[in-house]
Image (tube, rainbow, N blue to C red; front, side, top):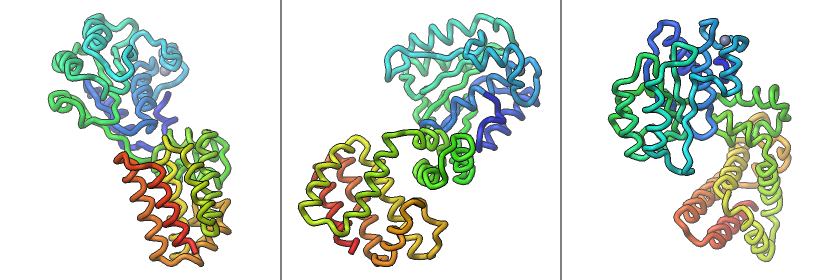
Length: 330
Ligand SMILES: [Zn+2]
């Protein structure tokens, strides 16, 4: 992985590349961002560049060291693993970091430890790591990747440089999806809106059959709900049981739909529509629904989401939502 291959995250890339150029690299970094936002890519680009035999501002991708980094078999880039799925234990830290970092690098000036899902370190593990962070050998670098930097002990936080990933701009994500992943325009739009600045998530969604299937279910429901009778609604409630585990995602898609209708109603601009392949229906609904009705539907989605999140009756929450949408759709 090279810095040049990473989309967005300009500030973090500049910070790390500057640190390398000025030989002011810290011994411990927290790289914080949501799932699939690119934390590992940044860590790997940083590690590869530090190790690269060309010693440039980015990994050359050609030298022996870069090839080893690329293949995940560089002797001085260590990936800390854990056996228990939800915990990184004190033993993991001792064996893989504390007892290992005292051995000098094999082939380079640095020895880099990448701890993915570092939020899974329990307190004992963090305390064990603290000793190494307080007195690291000159060649030692720790990269803690996490979805929750605030979860670390304050003593860890204060000794690390924290780099927080920012949402990537929608047009950069769309370009990447269309040019690199060959996703058609109308599909890319929905993924971009849904992923909210998370490029990795957008790429995953674009190629996920499950997501595409859920999306067509939602759009089909939106097309039909206005004219559905009560029996139809109760059938639909049953069908939506299938999406129980992903219902918040389903609701997010509904929100994007309603936002489309609302935005088109307000601006009359087709290019603002996310669901480009459904624009005839969105335009019709924009003409038929009142602003008040649209806001009520958006609120109803919120309420249903809250009810389900707080363990309310799933079917009841879904039914009330569908009835509220049906009522305001005509
Ligand atoms: Zn290289």
